[in-house]
Amino acid sequence: MKVHIEIDCTPEEARTFMGLPDVGKANDVYVEMMAAAMKGVSNPDQLQDYARNLAPMGQMGLKMFQSFVEGASRADKKPESSKD
Image (cartoon, rainbow, N blue to C red; front, top):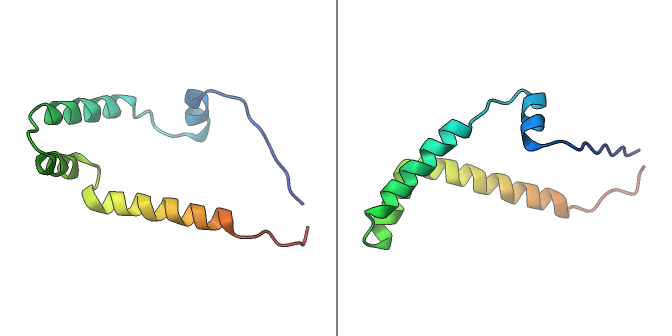
C-alpha cells in the first residue's frame, strides 16, 4: 500500500515545522566571504584554493554530498517490486 501526502507550505513554514534552525544569517556571512574572496582572484587555481578553504568541511563535505546525491539517484532507478 502506498500513501502520498501533499503539504502546501512555504520553505520557512516547513523549516519551523521540522524544528530545523534558521541558518539565513550564517548563509549571508558565507556568501559575503565567498564574494570578498572572489574579488581578489587572479587565476582559477587561486579561486579553487579559496573555495576549498571556505567550504563547510572542505573536500570531505563535497565528497559526502556527492555520495549522497549518487546514492539517491541509484535508489531512484531501482525497479519497484510487484508486491503491493
